Amino acid sequence: MSLSVFNLLLSHYLILGAYGLIGTPSFSHPPLATRGRCRFASASSDDPPVTQPRAPPPPPPPLQTKALPVMLAGGLFLFGSSVDKRDRAFADEVLSLAQDALRMDPAVSMELGQGVEAGGVYASSRSTATDGAGREVDQIALQFQVEGGNAWAQAVAYGVRYETTGNSNNDVRLVSLQVANMDATMSGTASNVAVPFYQ
Image (tube, rainbow, N blue to C red; front, side, top):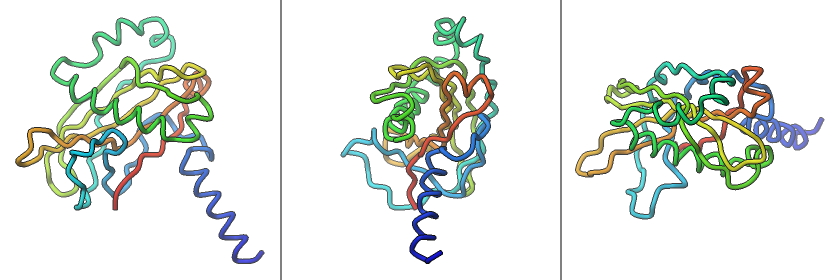
């Protein structure tokens, strides 16, 4: 096999792996890479540019996800009670970033269609932890419905919030995101959604 053909096959394998088309990872949070990940599509032109790499974020807080029958039967009740009032603004920012990531991922668009939205939250977990640089960060994990697609789906997002100096707006970042349709939920599997990161 020539070197050019090998490189071509390797690049295709890496692309398929990045979009979760190879393998079916567990719906539990995947191990976090040792690199920071940034907010992206929803950031406005007024946001300050990112020039410094982030330290590795802490592991996500434990999240007790809801079973499929509970989600289907009690969705409306869960949507109104799953996120504490003091955490709703934080959760909304993470959901907005998650929605952008879902829409940007070609594998998600192929499976669920265009224009999907982050819907109601089934379950959430919030805590404060220390990142790899010793900085204290707020963190939240959210299990939520994915709306507007061709089929029912749910997702789990993990986000962190850094306090910023000299700025009234805290720095919220999406760290990881997984999505599962009904079949994958029933089998306890999910696919990782590509989340852009900066070096």
